[in-house]
Length: 230
Picture 1 (tube, rainbow, N blue to C red):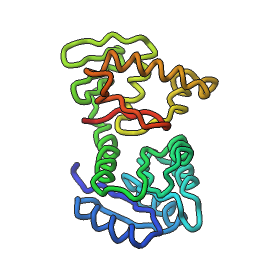
Picture 2 (picture 1 turned 90 degrees about the vertical axis):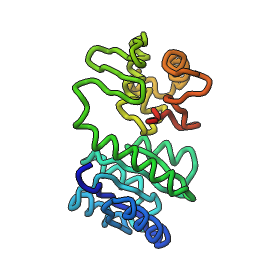
Picture 3 (picture 1 turned 180 degrees about the horizontal axis):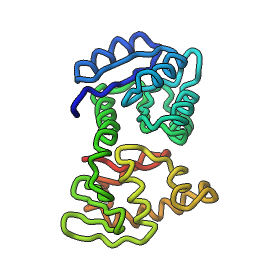
Picture 4 (picture 1 turned 60 degrees about the horizontal axis):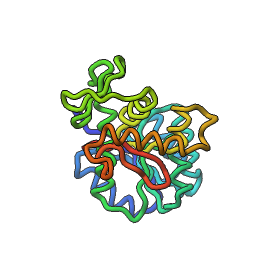
């Protein structure tokens, strides 16, 4: 990374600002702070941040609406940081387009790790060689529809390949069950999660060294799945 990544911290809690802004700056990030939704939207347009850390409980505009408006005009990664830990809160904001969701209270190192994962996708995007992506010992060739673990080719069905391709392309990001179902089977399948559960079980048996203890294809309970970057 040739220059410091610019992070926009959107949170109206002074304690969060005092804790997070210095922490992020100490790790080499360029940090801007917004305390309202209007300030956040203005900063997105004027400062073009590389990543947004977004609280949902803002005083003027609901955080989910901020996420929706940002997604309408930008693909900038959004890591939600919120005290709302309910399943429906997580699913709704991830479906809108947030990249990750961290619940308050949180561990600073966990948040920093989530930020690194999101930024890694941004800064490595232009470095991907053609249609091939290597993550850990797994490599996927999107053009030839081949998957390799080391020198060994893994034979996948078309649907298994689609699922793995989708998760690897969004590595580190939680994809909701609904989003995956819609992407692979279409909008009519969003209420049929059993299709996804069966497919994921089949894929893990082929891709994971130990399917009972996945290292790549991780579950986010009641929410969705994430391809882990090791």
